[in-house]
Image (cartoon, rainbow, N blue to C red; front, side, top):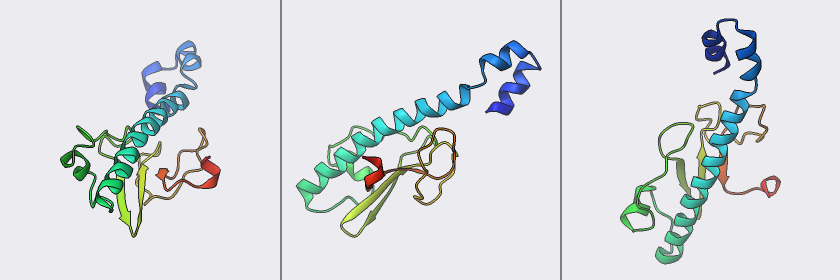
Length: 128
C-alpha cells in the first residue's frame, strides 16, 4: 500500500508526510472489523453446537440453520473467514494484514508486523 501511496504522491513531500501512517490505521480498521465479525460467527457456531450437540461441518450450515442471514466477509480476503472443524473444537481465523493464508499460524497481533493469521478461535491466554 505504501508503494502505491508513494507513486500517487509523485514525490510531493506534504502528501507523503500526511499519509505516512495510513497503512497502519488501514490495517487496524480492518482488524477491528474482522474481530467484530468473527465474534458474530463464533457466537453462531456456539449456538449451533448447543442445539445440535456438534459443530457445523461448514460455515454455510449456520445460514441454513438460521443462526446467520449471511456470512460476514474477512476484510483481508473478501471471502468468508477460514473455518475448520477439529475434533470437538474448531479453528476460526482471518488472513490478517499480510493477505496470506498461513494455515492458522497466529500473528503476534502487533500493528507493525503483518505476518501470520488473526486467529479468533481457539482463544489462547495471551489474547485475554
